[in-house]
Structures are given as C-alpha cells and as structure tokens.
Image 1 (cartoon, each protein chain N blue to C red):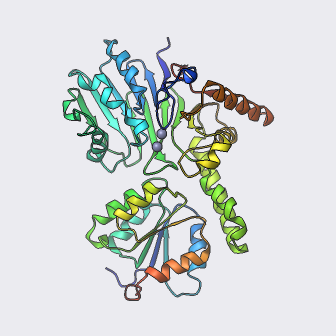
Image 2 (image 1 turned 180 degrees about the vertical axis):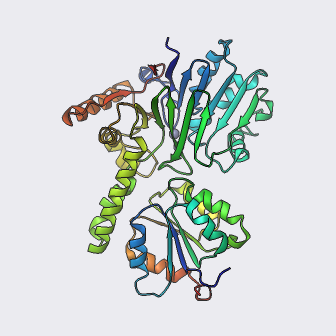
Image 3 (image 1 turned 90 degrees about the vertical axis):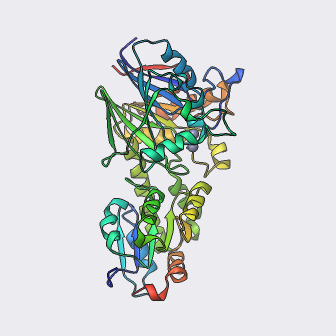
Length: 304
Length: 129
Ligand SMILES: [Zn+2]
Ligand SMILES: [Zn+2]
C-alpha cells in the first residue's frame, strides 16, 4: 500500500443503509480518510468512522488524527459516540468544523452525546481532545497536509474543504445543492419584468462561475450527487445535488477525477449502477476526459 | 453613531446586488452602501448603525448568519434592523435568523418591488437620517 492515499469508509448521505441490496456500494454514512504516512485527516464522522477507529486501534504507530467536519447534521457526526480512539488515553484527536471559535466547535461536537440521547458525554473521552481555532485566512496546516474551507449551499453553515496533499488537490464537498439559485430563477423567470430578467441572468452567471470556482483545480473531487433528476424534483430545497449537475460542473471546471458521493440511502446497487452508466454517457457525449466513479465503501485511491 | 450613515447597508458578494438595490431605492432619497463580504463591512459597522441592514447568507469568508451572531454582541448592533436576503431557502436558516432577531427573510430571485416594500415596511423614518 502507498504511503499517501484516501479511503472511503462511509459514502451514504442522510442515514445508513445496511441492506443486502446496497452493500456493493456500502451502507455507512459520510467518512473519508486521507492518509500521508502517519498523518491521518478524517473528513466527517458518520458511521463510517466506527470501522476506521477500530482499524486505527490496531495500528500501533498512529496515535493522533484530525477530524474535519463539514457540518453537524447527524449523518456526519453520528459515528463519534462509537469512535474507540476517543475513549483511549494515549490518543490525540483534533477537531475542526463550522463555528466562530474552538469553544463553539466543541459545543457542537459534544451536543449529540448528552442525556437522554446518549448514556455518556464527551467528558468520558480519555484521549487528548483539541478543537482548532478558525483561521483568519481560512487556511489550516496539518503536518504534510493543508486545507482551506468555504461555505456551500446547504442548511446552516456548511463547509466544503480543499485539501492539499503531496502536490495534489482533493476537494471534499459532501453536502451542496449546486445551482439552486439558477434553478429558482428559471422557475420564476416568466414572472419577472425585463429589467429583473437582465439582473437575474447576471446573478445566474455569477452563481455558475462560483460553482466552478469551488471545484476548479481538483485532481480528485468528492461531491454530493444524492439524487436522480426525478427525486431532485421532489426534494428540491433539501440541500443536495442532482448527480447530473455534479457531473456537468466537474466537466466544465476541468476536474480530473470525480467521485459521486453522499448517495441516497434509498438507492440500491442497481440504481447506483444506472447513475454511474448515465454519468459516463454524459462524459462521452461531451467528449470530456473526466474520470468518474461511484464512491464505494472500502475503495482506496492512491495519492502518490 | 455618525449622523451621515446611509440608511440602507447591503452585505452580499454578488456584483449585481448593487443594481438590484439601486432599482429598489429608485424612488427614494435613501442612501445605499454595499459591501461584498462580512469582513469588508466590519470596520464600517463598528462605527455606523444602518437604518436597515440586508445580509446575504452564503458568501465567501464569514457567512451571514455567523456574522449576524457576532454583530449582536456589539452594543451598537444589539437591535439593528436586519433582513436576510438569500438564495438559500432552508427552514434551518430561517429559524437561526429569527433567533438572531432578523426581521424578515427574503429569497432570491425577488421582484425589485419586494426590495422597495421591505424597506418601506421596516425602515423607521426616525432612523433614516
Ligand atoms: Zn449529509
Ligand atoms: Zn446536511
């Protein structure tokens, strides 16, 4: 195994899907490990972080890691109460996520482990736990890794992360309803007068450019692709993207490799295969060199 | 508080937002000041209390709701009239905005008339200098 890689430990959005028909893709919720030698950066702490924690316990050379959270919805934090390294004294665990200061991040992380929702609180975590301060320039260094973050389109404050690792750029945007304003404008276009049409045509272009900027330069993009177009119509405004938009944005932004992520728990392996084949056909039609994959639990991608 | 404060302050990263508000304020003589980020508005807002502050939510740098929470800690802005103006239309954002004392939450794309109406509704004549 190479000394720099990323591994998908959980690829579902919303809630876990431990159903036989889904296990080809995987049932755990959001968690991606980025590893460079003995440095471990974990993106999100859904149920996928539980098996990651169990595996780390067996690796005697690693006793520290940094967990970066996109936001505090349950599918991104619900593995933490069962993350074994947090309960073991010789571990050092850092957290980062949305919040005005380290104390607010701590409050958000701790809130789910309070009675009556969980029998023990984070005060039973015996590891050395630190919460990082937000950086003025939104850039944080962690050993050989560095990352910055920016706001994405999802309820509450939600971050997308741009991680620099060994000269490569990995962009992790687990939850983002891309092109939402443009779609709202399209729906209301005929109700607008000429002056408003001109104005909102401009805003639509601005939003499109911002979506491209968010993912531009990615060697690897891991992006929300939760819905089919049919389901997106029903769940518009829930904070997630239609996979077709995700693929098109990745193509236009010149992303090298795209991992469709945060899969809907209602989609079984056959449904995911359909999404994959359709994505490939979009890429072929556009004669794009984008490499597209379905993020699957257990999949390891070399970063060397 | 300085006496020459503009009545309407807008914080939004969209370059087109100024055009929208200029159109909305066309028939009034209210002053307008626009900032493209929360960070860029802070020096100004430490000194000035607008009659009405429009705040976008999803922006580069600090998002509008996080910024509003910070503003509420400044004595000058404890009760500043704030209206959220966002393309995000999520119940979670609406509830946070309400808790932070935002008067209203309007979603893009709104007709220009909505801007005019909201300003007329919330801008108190006494605070419009
Ligand atoms: Zn999620
Ligand atoms: Zn979420």
